[in-house]
Image (cartoon, rainbow, N blue to C red; front, side, top):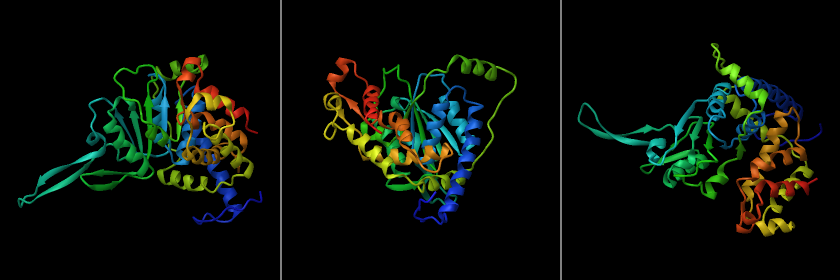
Length: 338
């Protein structure tokens, strides 16, 4: 492979980069196998979540209760050696409940001072369970943490641990008493991963594995430091001009203002912004590494189009009345790539 990559983090020559990518790919295979031994029938969900972690992003998991979303977060934390926490989002949850708060303390000498008590957001892997049940005020507090990797309490900034990832869940069926996530917060999620029911064989494996006397637990494959090194390495994976062109064509075709697709201009209210292009660039690099390849292809772009674009586009009233879905629109866009 003759591609030359700019060396900003002392990764080394191109040959050394190839060796590092191959070594990382092997470790990711081990991590995926460990997770697959606990999470049955959700290979695509596991794959897309690992890609998001390698890209340094956050995941929005959409699925009905009981499909293993909480177990997935616990298993990811164990396999990647991350400090993980879980917060159940409810309408009465306040920003201080997740960020933390300052308390007034008095010393033995009578001196009073404020001490900051960290909330559950100070972890490396945060599960925000049913995130859309929290009020917009609490959602905006989490938004700052997701975007800036720090929180502001009483006028003071507090840095979050590194790496920091949010895996949020939503129930697509029950919408009573929920607060829809604003577009600005949805855009902060690297991917929206839809979690479907497992097939018959996977559900049989779940029955046998989870109701027996033996408690199966995944083993740690990587550490938090290893994951951060992997995230740096992913950014050095070379991307060909044809792949870059495909990403730009896909994203710009999804915007009514710049699209050549009549269906997009007719049915799409607003399309993906530049953050979608950035997510695709990092995503295809990470997917190439997880697949044991040294560079991404257009197939990687097409494979990630749905999870990266589906929450960054909105349909208008005409689309809803005609039964058009975001998935159908993205399928049309992918059909014009290549």
